[in-house]
Image 1 (tube, helix red, strand yellow):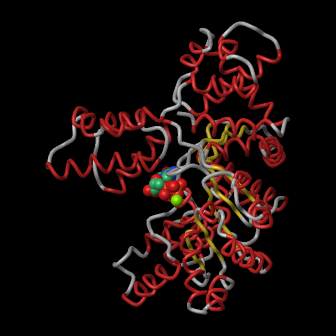
Image 2 (cartoon, helix red, strand yellow):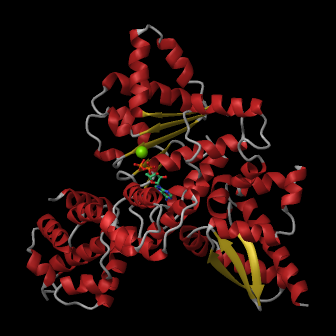
Image 3 (spheres, rainbow, N blue to C red):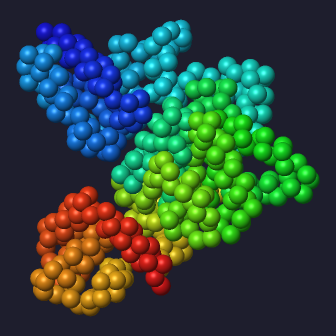
Length: 490
Ligand code: ADP
Ligand code: MG
């Protein structure tokens, strides 16, 4: 009986999905439901696995009521839908185990269900052709040639990209683009500080799109390469080769466009390249180390092009995401380090993923060199200098209070004091909100720095700011500017 009910519920879910799919755009569908799967049911609760907290929150907000209504219609009883975040790897395990339609055997046969399956899990497609194994030498030569022309690094893939709260919007948009390049989110610009995963993410779009469709012309270039190539083309009077190359691409990825500041001729060329590709509905993807509005020496018409479409940011990962990234890197490396050591690294390296990775590699290299297991003490010693640099760069709550007080023309002691006038409450709440978002301090620690306030006051302040951001469009840019100022403070 239980089994029968389980099957029934999955049928309800599939029908509800068809219903929703018929009402939303392809892009919206891919963004929110592309990787959502039926999981199981217990009593009247149906569990659905979603790939990220972002998906969970958005589906809850946008579709949950409708889904419950459809379920009620279909089943004649109230079915609760519970959205469970399941990381991609876990989902994949379930997928192998329980999906009644898309089995790996069917994928091998290449039947109809295959497309849907590999859409959701491009890595399965790759597993079928492990490099240097089933692939014959001709196709691996093709692959090498493709790598050379596309300049994509095969290691930058979605399945090695850990999704957390800091990057889930950008990552979901990237996945949607790789499935439907040139349709929506065009152009897409990903911005964020050094080492936060911009290059990895946009190259993953290129790699995933290539896996889906080998005929697509995909080119990755840093803004610097693009500039050099352009200058060489002019010198060698091969302008039109350059134009031909860059204007006949299906997906163009240009990394680090802040490099183009002050390079007027290259900006002009990119402007025309942009227009040609955009008009032909080809996908354009860029990265930048800051929001485009903050770039100096950039021609307005190019700025305006970058700002079209989707601009998404990457934030530093929180503790859990940093830990998950380290775990993933260890797995990839086939190495072993205790969780205690990973915790030590995560606690001390908070600002960017590149540094996190570098610390890990240093320990792995050391353990290989001395052929012995790394203890917590060895790790501590080996990484002492790295940690101390991080601490110097870390933002203190005092810094935040100073910058916010300056900005609102109040005194830092007012922020810590008891005054409850309107002119003080907002800056105080903003300071707490920033402290919560860019430091590792807990709400209790933050409260202490604000005149010994309780952690619940800090949480309440953060919620107030979050809801104000939704209604006051000037607040978020102001906070972003403040954060930048704070991070640049000595
Ligand atoms: P950026 O281009 O923003 O400076 P990169 O894309 O070069 O950063 O990322 C730096 C390193 O951190 C790369 O090795 C990348 O694989 C890794 N990395 C960044 N973000 C993630 C993530 N979310 N999951 C796994 N690895 C990541
Ligand atoms: Mg980069």
